[in-house]
Length: 150
Image (tube, rainbow, N blue to C red; front, side):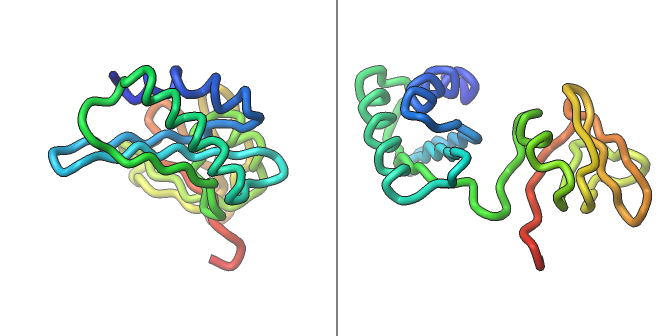
């Protein structure tokens, strides 16, 4: 089962509990694997939230058994340097400082750190040193918020 298929399986359960599945990381290997679900809600995430989602997701994974082999399940909050993975995330954090890495160079560079000016279904616009850069979401590798003072 692919990571996207696993996300499609887990997302309804997470949403029914009142949370957003913001990221899902799956790493499987011969020495054991990892399934890490990152959740969020407008009020923020606490330990009780992680435990609640962990119990529900663990039960679903036990019944459906979509992941071969042994793995650890982790459920966590996005943290201060949260990953931005959906258009809605970019829109929510417009005006914030972001760090973006592209899969391919854009305007001769792959890394951009600056103010997130705008976003839509195809591009984000980041201002770096007073210059705006339109970055296609299709070729974005990673994007994270930069915590204040970092």
